[in-house]
Length: 535
Image 1 (cartoon, one colour):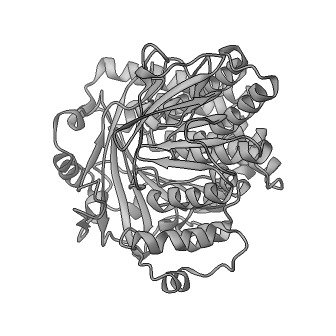
Image 2: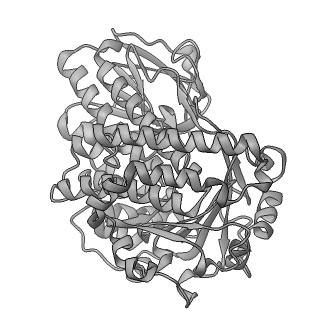
């Protein structure tokens, strides 16, 4: 198909995973539709967002990237691990722990590589990507009768006519952040805000080398996204297979080969040798803190925050003994990054002729790896709404109302889940209760649909937490936690609080969900496996 750069049916702002995934889904159902993606960067750069979950991987497979391609490129992830690691826990191996085993094999991706892999898939499917294109929303016009999208390419002003524009620009939220278009990208109404700092390291101590684990796990603990939890926040531990030092031309040839879908799959070493690419082992390590409990990220340098918690959390300090920070591994990330008070959402996620997806719709805390998973669900709902609009030839806001309602509900559920996770860090038993409660919904939902390889509407219930019974019980769960924390905060400053202060919270949570946990115990394999040891 010959593309016109001044006209298309659907324009997508941002060549990230959600924008490209949306384009691929729509192209499968409406192959005659002309889709153009406008990407500001001339080349894909590194971005945060490495950790995937089952639903996201399923969505990518549904759009043509094989599981074997993931295996060749990326570090395997088998689930999520949680430790209660306060100042008293000298050793990670003796810290209270809970593991959610993966529902199927997932991966810790490197974004430059992953985004380039999706780009190769888009090119294969006749989706045009224009790089170095800067959209000018204040110069553009949007209406139900057609859009006039203005962007700049190498300094030249370009004009594009299209029926629908999708904002997939991430937290930049290029359309929805404009007051005149979407009303603004605003802080979410949450009990507390959070902020993060992170960096990349070599020579972090492998968890597989710890030889005195208290509990059994199905896989090496390196193969989980690990969360070191404490009352101020948490620390993430993510091993990554990095291809950053590979020549861009060679890397793109390798990714085009993998995206083809018909070529023979090689293991990583053979793949690297065949295409003269290089890979190495690195780690993504980050710290997320509640602003109300520790505002040091707001006031201090990332280096100072890392230094503080290396001393404050003994098990973290031992994990990082001998580790080397990578000062210039990623050119656009040298060496630290931080994001402040990031729990935000678009005041409006759709209007006449446009809608927002992914992080441009809302951004929640990275705890529990929600971004890519939730983004896949949002893109699927957007696909459904967009196809409906083209079939009805109706591009007004009203046609997107069903989409708006579903995304608002998804945002509310995911934000509640995030708040529960942070509040559970007040007591190790609360972590186990929260994780078991959530896992029952997730595993039960996955078991019901795991035989269906195609990504479907049911997969958009990302953790199975939108079912009415669980949704209501989750609200009660959160209310108890907030109520108890407020009571403790009214009598003691944070520095003097101990887990004993939250025993009543644990008792109330157990009363709420104990029968539910007992009835569904088979859906908590880690708990079942270790029950005799716990006794």
